[in-house]
Image 1 (cartoon, helix red, strand yellow):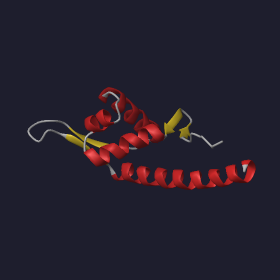
Image 2 (cartoon, helix red, strand yellow):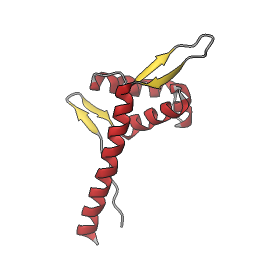
Image 3 (cartoon, one colour):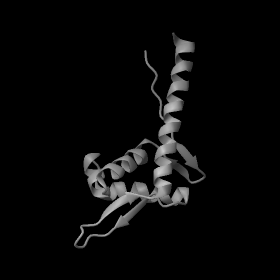
Image 4 (cartoon, helix red, strand yellow):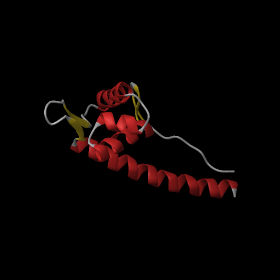
Length: 109
């Protein structure tokens, strides 16, 4: 038997941040493009854009700065708020996993 769980952050309007937005931000940081991030995650660009837009609205902060095409081809990068959110969520999930694994072992081993 093993422990399975999902954790996310909510605001009054509903789900605000979880694994999906986290993965999108992580991939944007690596690839410098929301479009490339979406392709790597096997989701459409429009779905990735809608997810990030919803998260930004619910959290009240910009997570990604988007530059439109042109000669340089455009791209996306994380804002300071986006970098902070990525770091905080990663740290939170790591600590939560450790705590939940300990509780699981205590009660089910």
